[in-house]
Amino acid sequence: MKIYDQINEAAAFVKSRTALLPDVGVVLGSGLGEFAETLEKKTVIPYGEIPHFKEVKVKGHAGRLVIGKVRGKAVGVLQGRYHYYEGFDINEVVFPVRLLCGLGIEKLLLTNAAGGIAPNLEPGDLMIIRDHINMMGINPLRGENDDRLGPRFPDMSRVYDENLSDITADNMRSLDIAVKKGVYLALSGPSYETPAEIKMLSALGADVVGMSTVPEAIAARHMGSRVAAISCITNMAAGISKKELDHKEVTETANRVKDSFIELLSAVIPRY
Ligand code: HPA
Image 1 (cartoon, rainbow, N blue to C red):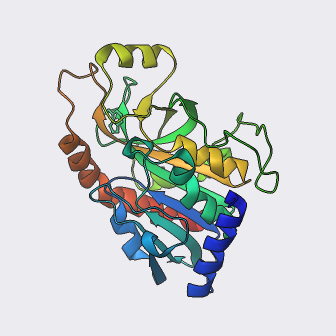
Image 2: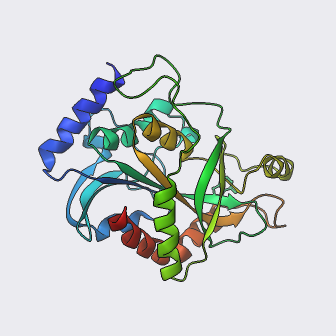
Image 3: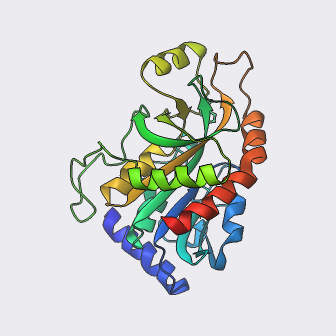
């Protein structure tokens, strides 16, 4: 079955569960799941019930689509994402975002955990992604293009919407969160990088490194949604600090920042 038809089937299923159609889509990264609980008038749909969704494997990711309102704004929240490193096909990774686009979202906010490379970053910082470098070795648009979804060769010169970024920066200032902006470089993972690799990535212009977000941003731009993204710097990348990398540090930092990150999401989403 064509992806276009899969999206329509999944969208029809969601519409049979709720009459609320999201205007803004949100993908919650590690540790941010709680945000979905704050929605008003929510409809919760486990991924397993949605046609063409895969079963989620990563611990700590609930794997649910939550549709509701944030201060009056209709949102569709993906609580848990599919990572390429889990072994999913890249079309499976981006399917939830394609569904949100199929439901009619016009803006998508992506969040993630990332390792800090740039010297102005430290663990606990939030960074607005202003551009990305795709070094995952894959592209979700590979294969026959369906013109009903988007163009064969979509422009990527402005993936991250300047207007949405300005709104985000504005709310960060109001909440006393330092405003940092930078380039997110995506690798497939799941092993963390070597210090030599981080030195290379730094030379290539990366401010942070992570294992998600970029395929979702590409798929959403392809379907015409505007995109914004925020990284939580959970650790300094390999060799930037002397510390060895440990997934525990990633989850601990994500947890420590969670409350202010969630406060930021609640403030920006209604203004998107
Ligand atoms: N590298 C890659 N992905 C990550 C990191 C990192 O240091 N931290 C959180 N996600």
